[in-house]
Amino acid sequence: MKNLRVGVVGVGHIGSNHARLYAEIPSAEFTAVYDVDPITNRTIATKFRATPAGSLDEFIGMVDAASVATPTNTHYAVAQSLLMKDKHVLVEKPITDNTAHAAELADLAARNGLILQVGHVERFNPILGALEKHLTHPRFIEAHRLRPYSERGTDIGVVLDLMIHDLEVILHFVRSPLWSIDAVGVPVLSRSEDIANVRLHFEDGCVANVTASRISPERMRKIRIFQEDAYLSLDYQNQSGEIYRRVGRQIWRDRASVEHEEPLKLQLTSFIECASTGRQPRVSGSQATAALELAVKITKQIAAGG
Image (cartoon, rainbow, N blue to C red; front, side, top):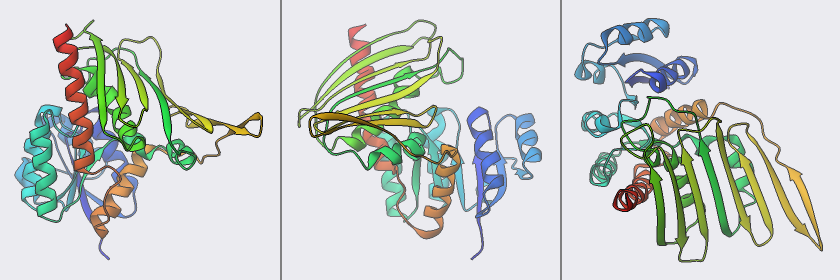
């Protein structure tokens, strides 16, 4: 079977990594890039042996599937243009900057029989898969996602920029309607919140406490899950984890066994497979829309509190 022609729209920090990995994946034919900055466009295309498209329309004619790694407020227009031309799309998170546009993209992909995958890359982190098989009935979840300040991503608040990763994972773990939200956030170096905390109560009794900061002196991406028979601790950054289980009247600790892989490469490989076979993606447009809807509710509560 002929390899899928793939390309990247928006080849800044994130998009250039998409380009690097597409050029390495054997099941893909990396054909084109498009960026509004002509120098970046030519540089990345040359570096990874692709063609620099002169416009989005020209780019669309060169690919069967594409990653969209442009600023969040352009995701809808770019992804819609690709889907309207029957191209499979992987759009970086958050899927869009509002839920109406996100739902529209999900509906458009479904109607046209196309793959719309969203870049919630932690779902492809090997440590998550290694520990997920031990998950039964979460009762309390605590997540921390911290990084130092950078201008990149500050067109949106930290909830949409960072916390949304953990919100999507938590919604995947806790299959229960949300009962209440209690959120607080503070802008420090940006116009929108740079640090935020939210406590989520679900109807089944599960509680999740989630913290995100982009003004931290350290980097951290951890999540801890407590359930009746075990406590699971995951370190996304180091791809390590521990399982504490009750065995009789004792607590046993096991280290998770995991084969380290680059999550983004696993995500892009999966996207190519889904686009080639029609298999549904791990994070679909509708799942990403649910995470976005929750993130928007949290940001609105933060804004109202401020």
